[in-house]
Length: 330
Image (cartoon, rainbow, N blue to C red):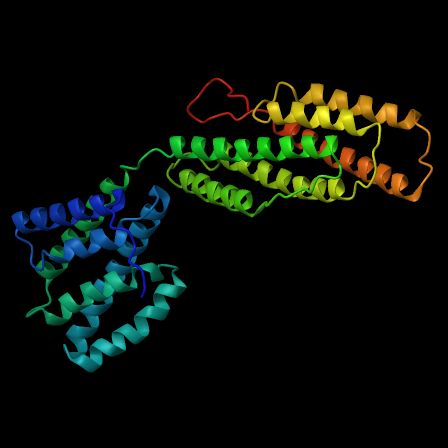
């Protein structure tokens, strides 16, 4: 048996309900014909973001004015018949594609049916339909100006990602201390979390008319790039076959990185520690067995991947919020 989704009233649902009621009340008070149609306009223009809402409103307003003019002209010339109605729709839909306002086709059909059912097609009808558009689209625009802040949600995702990064580096540190230990890490949940966070950060951008980027989005994008490096590090660690004098130092470095995942201040220090390990490695004698040679090769690759991880973080710098004059270090 198919499970039912949990019952939930979202913020968008509340805005839609209030907007529909306001549209009908205002249109009825003014004395407009077909006043209930203003509610349809509100429903169709309530979107997830402010930018998408404005795009939908402009598209619907332009397409409705087009169909109002075309419908009034053709119905007056050919009569208000079903065949004429179908002919108008046949010609109108490709026209909306040409002007890139095809999102308003459904709304335009509502207006077209008003003209089709009208007893007389005159200026009173046209003025009535334009007022319906202004009321319905205007209320939808005002409703979409009210958008909940996504900052707290983005901060939660940031914390979740950092916690998982910390856990991974702690596991790397323990495995370097005991190379025989099996490295059991799944990156799929972390990958899903980062992608979800990026989608919310992108939506936050679309809730602002004067901002075309979001620091959180760049932060999550940086973490996604680092995630691929973590995958490669895991492969290198799994290839460690024997004990090596560098393992204890790498274990300590992984532990330091784990304790400072959310900080940018210590990135340069971690790079310095890594370079010290690399200099020490250059002074070591070459391994004397195939297994130890493969282990040393894996450690060199591991150091390279960790270096790239730290360099990416140092280049990103700090997460600067749009409404915050101070830099918030990660």
